[in-house]
Length: 253
Image (cartoon, rainbow, N blue to C red; front, top):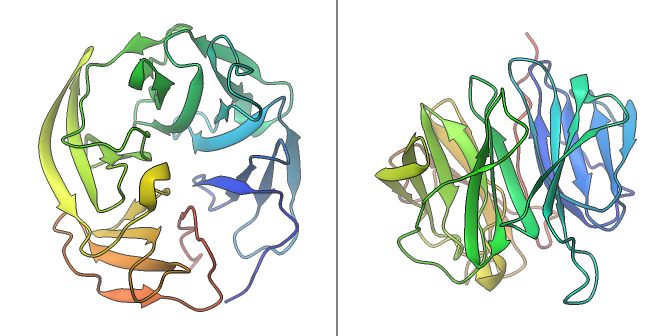
């Protein structure tokens, strides 16, 4: 349909209730907001660090941005950092998690509680509840892992977590500081390599996920039934080279 250009290593995408799309730029250290179908940003937020993932609180419109490490090993933040932009405006509040020096992805649930994953002593999951300023660690263990966190999204009452190898999504029931796996969604033939699964997006019985296959080594975006998974119902391959993240801005009617 069209291209948006001019970014410096875009890493994460998210969308708000109005259909506005946010692009988190890792090397550019900024988040750009586009109206549904818009070709130019309507707002650009400066980020003091390498922006990795983003999520919008459905109860308030607040924008959360996770920061990753953009430098040599040992030069990362002493604590993982997430920036909270009230109503997606400037001058964010900062929240940190000492267990996760490198934060990757984030997701809000319907009540406005924020979930993050990252790297600390292994893969780390944590929750920042709506009424708290500190993170609570969550005991969540993926069935298999290549050592990198996968993407997150809250869907149908569960926390959906991508396997790091890119070929499955696992749904977890969150109960305090514990997580119980209740379902898995296999994405047949899809892979994202050892760097962690790229960001998927779940909407209306469908999951949209980027990755690679033997036939499309430069990358594709697959549409799969959700939560059944299996083989893709459609593939998008045109003009793609290393697709990394997906989100869906519903068409306005």
